[in-house]
Image (cartoon, rainbow, N blue to C red):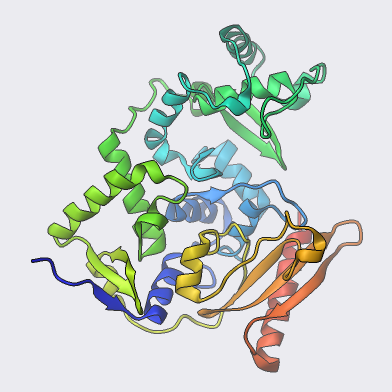
Length: 381
């Protein structure tokens, strides 16, 4: 007979997750490009997003864990040592290049079932684009100034035919993003960018399932089916089968969090044996796309906090603001700040400050100090 799940105190669960996200240490990965490489390797992916009222989220997520982070560090690991690459996880993300074999089957699948948002891409168009890349080297959209715009066939589609073809080839794994300047991407042939003598072998379905589970255990500590398979429901059946197998081998422990006995979580025994104790009162101003924030139901369960992403709401309906950022102090989300960078004036604007917890004068001073650091990051080169 299976044992009843362990009931884990919500505060303890929260501490374990904060530690797994490396938000309990002021500089857990060191500095320089090596820190950026290590952070992405640990987190598994760092989401890319186009919203830039403040610095885009991929830089923001890394800066929250690397105090001396420089934007050029990300460019270095993408374009110089090529230890990270861009591809789709639950969203477009930076991923460790060592994990590329786990994405090759998805790339191959795109070659026969390309998403409709690309519109109609013909074999002749793909062949011509690949020939141009082979002849002319890496290309960005600035190299296609003569493109004639066409009507969109999907909300996410591009009106530029060349961009559609490049993006289709990207998702098919024929090309990769070899460099990025803001949101301007430079594409190159995948094999040439990585200087392959032979392409890596694609992972098997069993290996991909193990990869998804292990990636979540490393960066989340306490996992559920939903947290492992965020926006990837088709993977749940195989993940659950692997979890059950590891539970039988005592490699995973089933548990519930607090009085929520409906949602089963799992953790490795070594995780539950980690020393107890609250993280230090570090202050992190987090992106709404940060791995700690992006899964809203999980955030509510662990932190008892509902984050509202209101960028797409009319101004009259917003409570927190257009692009509110949660503020983590120690183990508590204490405020939400709606910030905007005024680059022309060289300052960070606080458009709304919503206190969720009374931190007193000392807590407010700590948040203001974090805002000063955040402003320097925002306005830095």
